[in-house]
Image (cartoon, rainbow, N blue to C red; front, side):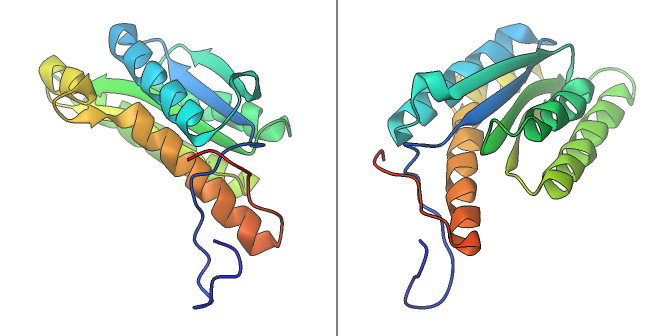
Length: 168
């Protein structure tokens, strides 16, 4: 929270007034749609208006950085949530895809100075992906959205701007 007595900036999860983009991979869409539903629900709980949430689809996880970059550069959003699902296969292909997505999204965040959160599942099996997209291990789309709201508020506090209003 801005102006904390200990001098440490820590954002909260009040999202009213925030504009959030969600970039979603179509590959493994049966999983990524579940991540998207979790992210949208988390943003609603934080008080982010449904009309302040934009969604853009990318063909695959490797393509998320360029979509996230376009969303960040648009100036229309305070944060970008990135969602995808990479499941291990018989070759090393999945590792290259996951690494490319992670490095690319990190670069977008640093270049834009904007929260770009990593909600890309990197699992060994489909069952693990299902468990992490609304199953036994929660919904990582929700986690990525909550992190985006918190980080957007942290950055606002550091910049001296007002925190978002209302919400959870």
